Image 1 (cartoon, rainbow, N blue to C red):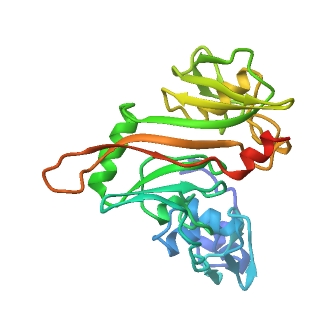
Image 2 (tube, rainbow, N blue to C red; image 1 turned 180 degrees about the vertical axis):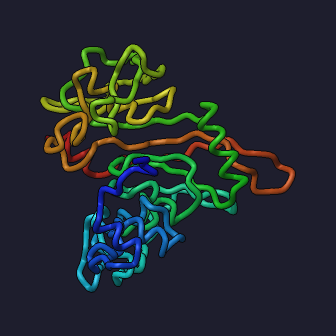
Length: 300
């Protein structure tokens, strides 16, 4: 006998193909899909990362029930609702140090974010007041300059990139450095074990900070800091390495040692556009006084 082909191994499926039988409804049901994938199709105005954030924040309901896991599997025809709340009203503008037609210089309070994270941010940021040029950590206070037009933003940003700005910070640290003044010249790199933090390492990027002790008591010292490079968390990492972390630092020190991160951007020297046509640009220095909590901590 000559075999014309391989014997069909699933007689039930064979009968379905031949029209002699039907599969049960369960076998014909559509496959379930991840919730975040469905939202991407339904709301192309948002990227997937933002939609995942919305889900985790409880802004998405499935058949009327809040679901907070982006990988939840549901049927494609399930009723999904995205309910992103309206942005909250802006708080009063931070204290203005200087303002003209091109720039806004403010005294940033501790706690104010520099920029929004994702499509929805339930709080005010520096970007609500102007175009971002540089950033300060959330809990760092002091001088920040914002641009009012793209041309000025580009001009100011280039000065930071080219190290043509001069910044002075003030910090209260735990203890007292061994030297009253010195140049900290230690390379910094990202800590791969904790990717949101940084550390001193031989393979890091060159980083230099000039410091001077202004005053001290039995527990703390007030330092003047002048970074000549602008690495992320540079001052916090350098001072931790010296064994004198900034007071109140929740990442590189003891969050309970002070009411906040005791770091303040005291002054910024930068060139801004001239205010009168044909007068050229102007070199200016903007300053912000130390917050009251600095004096209180040093009086302890």
